[in-house]
Image (cartoon, rainbow, N blue to C red):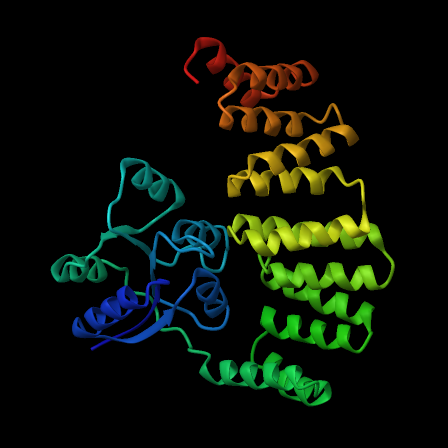
Length: 336
């Protein structure tokens, strides 16, 4: 019987069960299931895994986005990570390879193929499974939801003695915010982000604590950081919500309008994307990265002539802007 702990991720409940059953048949008993990439990311901060198998296509965050996040995290970057998909195109194979995938598994699953890939996973040293800590975290969260903050602190305080976790400090920050102790909340959220530099909710909590203290510049800084991480995770709805909140703090933030432009472009809403880019340019008409983004949007709108004008202006302002010059050259050559 295999003792390694595997994390299986797929929003398709049928496919997830099929993979679980096949892994059990192959002798892997310690299997954790996650029905979304966001849930998987939360689980990885509580329990160590020897290997991750994730579906490429998922709504809240794709498997490839989860892979990129893991490879950028110093604590998790070496975990074997496999992507599953019914049809790996050449583009997908290249993207997966560049992102550091350990292997690709075609669905429906082939037993022998899966067996070979799992046997190839490097044997890792045994790591402690934080089952007890996980139970305490759940208990602490339950007490927080019930408003029993002091009881929650008593439960969570015991956790830190057995090893610091980002979740511990995030929960402390949440409690301190609820109590109106914003300075203490900020320190707790800051510690959470030091332990997990991609912990979007901790940056968001820090931003909202600064906002409550009337420190608009700091509030905008950390809320923007949270929104950027949400966008990297392809969690568009949370990113959009935070960016709109930032606009309540600063009505003329070029960064927010630019971020909203990027967000709406990802959603395929080119009209709102252009609207926000134009607002950003009204504030900073010579900001080269905004000009570049508007040029890219016009390429999406199948208007290379108009796009060229924005790339030309970006290069004129910054002659060393390589990406803008390369796209401009491609337009002039007719390859775009």
